[in-house]
Image (cartoon, rainbow, N blue to C red):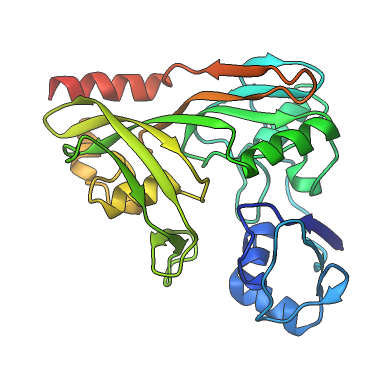
Length: 303
């Protein structure tokens, strides 16, 4: 089965085996095997393990035929806005952006399709319409494109860092200073394929934060991302020893998570703004906290 992907900003500069692991949902070892078996090309030329991918490169992989599996479960997604160009949803926790190996739960792409939304076919087939992602355990605003023009325009805006993405997160402890910028490179964790870490030689990553409220055991922050690395907020907060409450993957205290009745990271995409791909008008959207996060925040205020 031949699969083709265009490299976006999130993968530019990565080694091809790393890119393969994220694009195809396989381990890096499997990606290396594909390279050794001459299954991979970059811009139609055979790729080797030391190859690095650049923005706009076209990677083609001859994947083994997948095993048959049960149909993907779907959910009704709250729609904030929809027109002929894109749809903005309020993604609940427990929903992945798109299908990937090892994930058997609902996805944004599958659920929107089941709801009758026709997404653009531009881009990789399993990520049609996807121009950015939220983690499975992160809730809030996400835009998905319905036309080729919207896909190209909004993806370019993400690349050019003109999209305004605002998150709120509840982190452990009190931030000192209360407002600041975290400028620390992020790379995949050297011993854990599903985690990332601040590492010398990683990809440049910049997070701006401001404390909105402080409590006995936690602080509510507003966060603006200058870059969009995988798990960026979670990794940067963990590196400061103020992990997102409930984020056990990145070192959160399970006793605090229990007090707050949290079973995922307290992280919500509250605002999203970008230029409309047709009119050029600046459009913006807002999402209230998910019910489980609002409950945890009330508990934090009273601890």
